Amino acid sequence: MLRNIIFFTVIIVIAAIGAFLLHLRREAPPEDNGRVRAAASIYPLAHFLEETGGDRVAVRTITPAGVDSHDFEPTPRDIRTAMDSALFVYMGGGFDTWAERIAPSVKESGALTVEMAERFEVEPEAEDEDGREDHGHEGHDHGPFDPHVWLDPVLATRIVGIMKESLTAVDPENRPYYAARAREYTEELLRLDEEFKAGLKDCTLREIVVSHDAYGYLGARYNLDIVPATGIFSGEEPSPRRIAGISRLMKENGIRHVFTEPFGSPRIAEAISRETGAEILVLDPVEGLTRSEEASGAGYVSIMRENLKNLRKALDCK
Image (cartoon, rainbow, N blue to C red; front, side, top):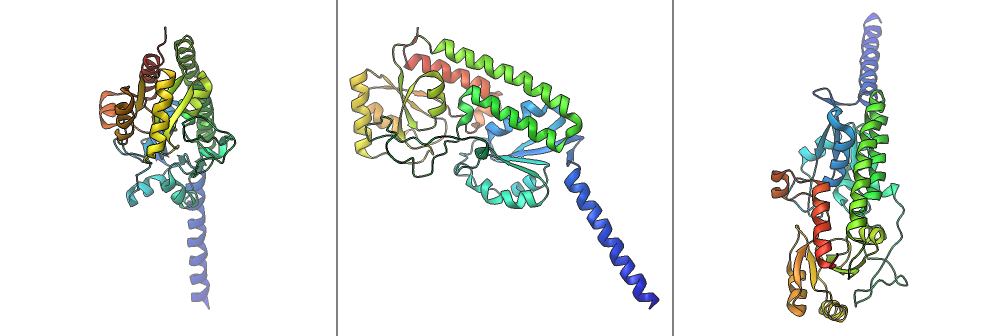
């Protein structure tokens, strides 16, 4: 009898200790040399996390530099990195599908899991075969959400706000620090917005031809007409009819440049260039960093300024 009582007492104590440790795991943020651990699925989200978290947060970018985020598949170690974090942020909306798959497990591990797509309400757009916007048809096959919100510096300030709220939720003691960091970086983003407004104000052209439809927010903010060869996610191949329609549009409207991107094949831009004689320029959707960008210390703001420089050339700005 006494032996049974001791046995059950030990079981209860072990269960209580386990429950206590689980409570600590969920209430106290995991730390890395005194810093809160956070992970993001892609570079732009990691960047905004780093700018908001400063030296109080250790941020891991799951998709490495030099890898197209659409083609990435996480290793078990990558998944463990997300699960061992206090905060995991991903885009969702069909952009980083691997992150959507692991999100339930990451959440179950105790990490605060934030899907950015849920925080934005975006209307679908579609284009006809000539590359013009057509709001009377269904959205793209991959759904209505365009994930490239960070390409609009004003919308990017909303991302910073979400990062501030999320970090505060897992680390409330540092609320004033995160608020100050978010406020400071928001001001920098708004200065970037002013640079774009001033730089694109007096331009001869207002249309740009791009490889894939990543620039809707950028176009809407600065009154640019975006002519994409393919849909929102890169890797698609446009039909010959599509290429012919875009080429005709460029010739009719005096468009002398076509944009390609750091990731993905330049074949689309090259095909359009052969048809029209257009010069190929780079317009970076900042979905990730190339290895050379990472090595040179390039980041969101510097890449966006390079985008502005190339836009001004293509649009023949004064």
